[in-house]
Image 1 (tube, one colour):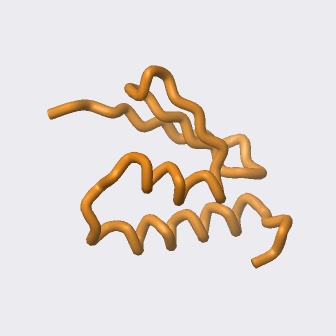
Image 2 (image 1 turned 30 degrees about the vertical axis):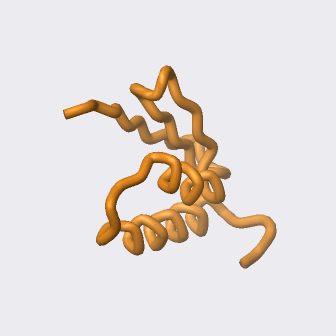
Length: 67
């Protein structure tokens, strides 16, 4: 794995990690740990999570709801 990756490489690696996690129970801490390699993350009182792919201006917002 290269030290400097393009945003497309980060996005692709992120999708591969997410694909591996889809058959496991969701754990927020593990999820964030996996994401941080490829994304810059910030959160607002653990209700909204902002992910920005490294090297890109595109941001994804995830709203956390309790059921």
